[in-house]
Length: 70
Image: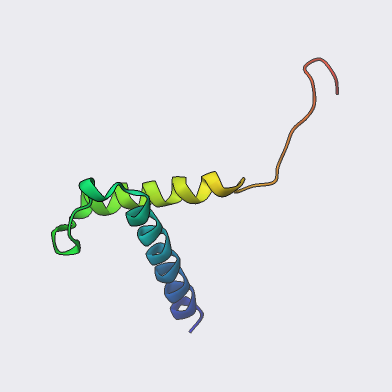
């Protein structure tokens, strides 16, 4: 049952990232959804992930130490 919930959440997140990637793509370069293959799917997901990453940092880990100091 837990695996089903995680799968549904993962597919939902991937769908959101995919549609953000479609919106981030210039309209002249968009391929109709019926012609999307594995390569276009992967590049659209990467484009969506990068677009979401530009909204703000995905992690809050900052290392401000200078070299030579402990």
